[in-house]
Image 1 (tube, rainbow, N blue to C red):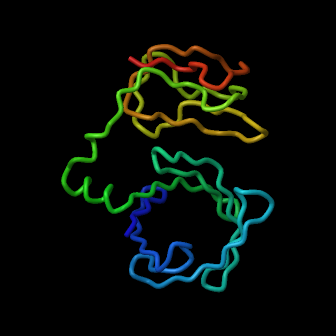
Image 2: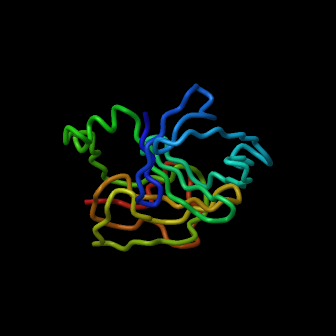
Image 3: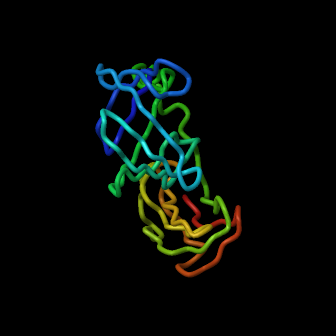
Length: 169
């Protein structure tokens, strides 16, 4: 059993097999036909006799979140597995909260936009900046609830992997 939060709307998902192509969504049976097209982040999906173009725009394995486009419309998706759901029910989901002192570039790229300034209080998942890498724009989100201490790069700067971009209090 999984819980998917899509743009703040919760959905319960159970898969029939490891291929994740059939199961139930909010108690309703589904069967998908998924084909990868034009690269590892682009897919063609048939669902309920309708066709969808799906692109994975961003993916954060640690936070279990993804940004996807479906026929051009953007969605933020967070997925919780059975353990995450159980921890939420027990009120223990914040025990694993990270203490974060800085944000480092996850890959080499160019800073296109900064959404924060020193002194800003940001929540986990808030947009911090846009980093262009390999011709893709990646929205970098806050890994925790933090206060911005300083910005170590500016718009237009090229950054290397693991270079500190933002320091937190």
